[in-house]
Image 1 (cartoon, rainbow, N blue to C red):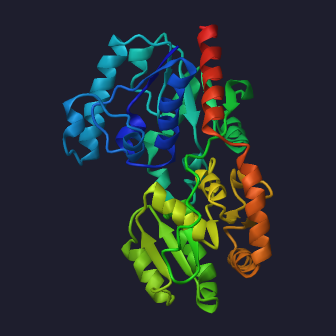
Image 2 (spheres, rainbow, N blue to C red):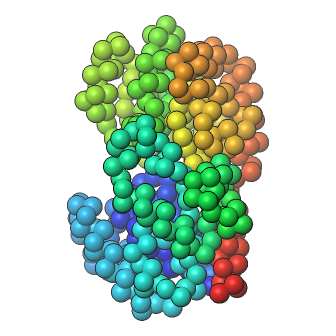
Image 3 (cartoon, rainbow, N blue to C red):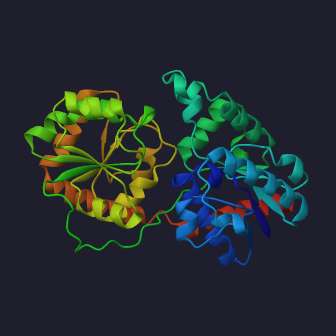
Length: 367
């Protein structure tokens, strides 16, 4: 089979879970004897670069920073290539159906990562403003020949929100991209620390979590390291100063190697999110022998099972109690690390690729 992927996620994301997923597919599909096509003129995406999957042509060597220019340029190129190329199945990398006119007649498989906008727009007006994306997701699920959900929780949410048949949806778990960390790499910080990874805004629940647990940072003399995402906003900086933890809450820009070292030396990885469709950082933490302290919302309990301590992200007391329990109990942390190693065996990119190929074959044979 020849599988066509489009530019969308690689134009929109410099790094992150969605482009990591499709980079793993672009790497893995050829290893199964099939062909992966990604028409792309330009991308700043880290995962593509690390996988040595270079965009096409001279544009890949130009310093283009404006995302709107990158998107428009890649969109036009994709449309031309979608008419010119031969392929058996089309798998968009995000939710726009703008290439559907060019791919009409070819089976389409769509991946749904979460229903954050659908479920949390009432709580966060910023999400409700993204009308275009919400419309795109609703249209794509109707038009798709098959849908991949990254967790049973996401499948359940898709059925409940869109009324789509469960028979149309295949649950395919994600994998872990981290290599075995260097266990001898020392901690980059002199104090013990908790680790918060990735974006912190809105449903990621960073500031409510920090307000809930800042007393533990002070009383136990520990830090909270925020790895990746953007540097602290003015609002975050003001709040950190207000509650007196300026020297305990630090931001760190990271690569995968740096992040692996941070996981390996952390007291625990903390994930107080109000909703996640999967949660790749859980697998990253497991692979680095890092204790997981997770929200009990969304798919997180499904992914981590009994290998984590859970907290209610809407309840300050629950967050405080869970963090204190993990920080104060070394034996608990050690037992969770063992369970995390066992849990990690259920997830791999090889399995994700093989199960995705099976979905492609199913829709191609039906057409």
